[in-house]
Image (cartoon, rainbow, N blue to C red; front, side):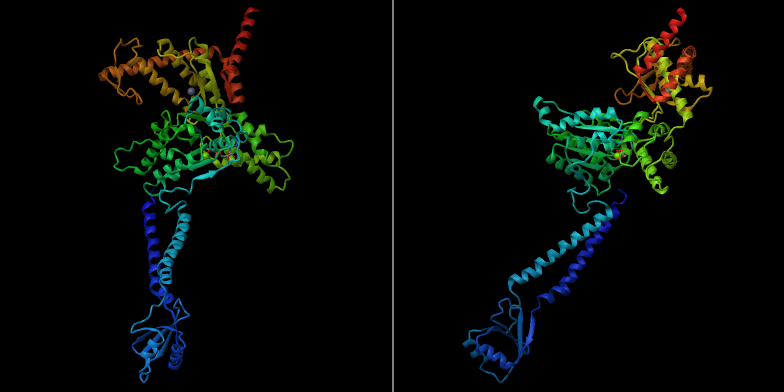
Amino acid sequence: MKEQPNQKKSMLYYYGIALIIILLLNIFVFPALLQPQVREVPYDEFISLVDSDKVAEVSQQDNMIVFTAKDDTDRLMLYKTGIWSGDTGLTERLLAHNVKFAAEIPTQASPLMSFLISFILPMALFFVVGQWLMRSMSKRFGGEALTLGKSNAKIYIESQTGKTFADVAGQDEAKEALTEIVDFLHDPDKYAAIGAKLPKGALLVGPPGTGKTLLAKAVAGEAKVPFFSISGSEFVEMFVGMGAAKVRDLFKQAEEKAPCIVFIDEIDTIGKKRDNGGIPGGNDEREQTLNQLLAEMDGFDGKKGVVILAATNRPDILDPALLRPGRFDRRIPVELPDLQGRLAILKVHSKTVKMDSGIDLSAVAKATSGASGAELANIINEAALRAVRMGHTSIQQNDLEESVETVIAGYQRKGAVISDKEKKIIAYHEIGHALVAAKQKHSAPVTKITIIPRTSGALGYTMQVEEDERVLLSKEDAMNQLCTLTGGRTAEELIFNSITSGASNDIEKATRLARAMVTRYGMSDQFDMVALETVTNQYLGGDTSLACSAETSTKIDAEVNKIIKQAHDTARSILSENIDQLHKLAAYLLEKETITGDEFMKILEEDQAAAATETNA
Ligand code: ADP
Ligand code: MG
Ligand code: ZN
């Protein structure tokens, strides 16, 4: 965007040069081309030519006679001779031989020739020069420069991506979510017959290098349909209005090629929230592009079999309009791989290299917690490079170990790969949440626990899903949730006797909930059914504003603190009572990195059964 004025200037500059070239050609080259050749002949030869009827036209100029020959129909040759003042019978002679004569210069060239030379030739030249300029400009600016509105450049069409789901290791959930789209693209008519409309778009969300682009290609490969891909950043770097034109064109081309996949990578670059209302003309270009994209998505016929996939690692900054039904209403998380996923990815990538037979990939997988698919692919490649350097005939275990270090050190992304110590803390933290939840009555069952970092920035998380839809929150439920929220930090305190910043999100959530209990739900001992806070924006974000005196506000803070402390104490006593299970489950999670709710419950119940038999004995 910033380069725009610059680009415009150089365009003008190129046009200027082209114009000057054409002018110079017109002044110096074309007249020369148009000038017929002139040959001087003696006067007697002229007379004999006239007598033998070979002269077509004659004209008299200042002090010479210029004439053309009859057999030279294109008049490419002019002949001249001096004027012989003694020859007084010339006029009669010319008349007798039917020669046209005048006192001016005869036509130099036939109308066709002069048309060709003075009109078509410059046009052709202009065209050739223009083409050349355009090509050199595209090279400079990495895209189309003069193809206004026609965006045939930079949209990458691959009729066959050559990728399939087998190339994508792990990511089973994402693959499952995408199979339906594959099926739809295979046979759109099957869906159309029933009138089923598939979502027009799906959004792949996940950290960089987790295989989002790869997945999109695999969908196209599985469905055997063309794959249009364009990156969001390419939409905005051209001249004003180009982005929108490009979107229009992209969709037109896609509809012609349907069924097909349109993949918009890094959609966050155009899909950012449109919130810069304060700055006039803020980011008009990007907004125009986004509006056009929204309009196209609404406008095209979903039954035709155009599926739009987009990828982003910043779902939080996307304009909500993009996520509305009929647009990118399906969201497919593509998270960092867990232990098994990492092992599978390493296996996929080791197929293309020569490995020593005794190699242990699982050791590499264990050592790379938090690494992305791209990083793992790189580890294999670095190991292969090292093997060559070392003169090995195949990749050895030590090549792999060395490359793990190089790659991980090379990235130096904060928290790219989590140390064992931190991993342990995170495991205890998450089990702390899960165990507190499980040991309380009426809390939602734990469905998944993971210590793989999330796109949201969480280092791990414990997922709980209510068995049935709830619209009412009882005071007990709220207290349960608070205890569960404090459970993570409590586990850290109990086991490591120190606390970390890992609980910041829990703290935020707990505070919000406890505050709502006091100010909005009337669930505190201190206040009755008094609305101390009102929700000002019911639908967007649910902002609240305080409606009480400063004195009451202080009391609210104290009450909130009291409630959270109470929850924290409950969590502490639950975990202290079940400390053996905490250890056991944390060790299990540490090894597996992701465990399902069933696995969690099984271990928990085994233990309870064992404890029961012990007390009976
Ligand atoms: P993203 O688009 O999410 O940033 P890419 O799809 O571009 O990531 O992945 C980059 C490379 O990393 C891929 O080309 C592939 O070699 C490797 N990779 C990433 N994830 C996986 C995976 N799940 N299975 C196999 N290879 C993967
Ligand atoms: Mg990508
Ligand atoms: Zn937590």
